[in-house]
Length: 193
Ligand SMILES: [Fe+2]
Ligand SMILES: [Fe+2]
Image (tube, rainbow, N blue to C red; front, side):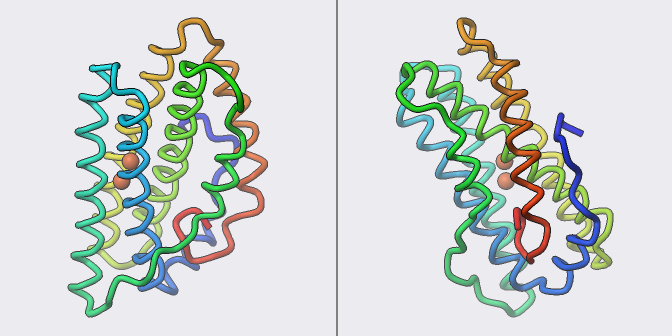
């Protein structure tokens, strides 16, 4: 699915379900980071009107997701916990090219974003299938579809702005890198943990 090299162990969903309060807090901050990331791409690449137009929509969708998670947190009598670090995303960030052109760093950032969307989508799909809680199962199904759309948006713009770059090769390298990285995860109650 989505080119990912390694599927998440279904036991991770059980673990996530065992600590809903923690998974919801972690998830809320993932959505905040996704919105922030889209705004950063806009800030650094303001001259690309089509990119800015679509990422403004995407950033708002991520903020909506943040709000949706927060609403569930409140409804269940929990309080949003402090921001959680996402070591998976931090590790993935290290794959980015250093010292390239602005265009190269844009393409790299778009591929990095597409990768996180792809893995999040895969994790949400697993949660929607495995989790017993009907409200959360439906919720994760809805988000899975939305994040799949974001994946397509980021990959599409990477291809569009990477005409002089071998985007498919770079994407394949990133998929390989992520496939190895994710082997160290799947053992904690967090969206990418
Ligand atoms: Fe999202
Ligand atoms: Fe997303």
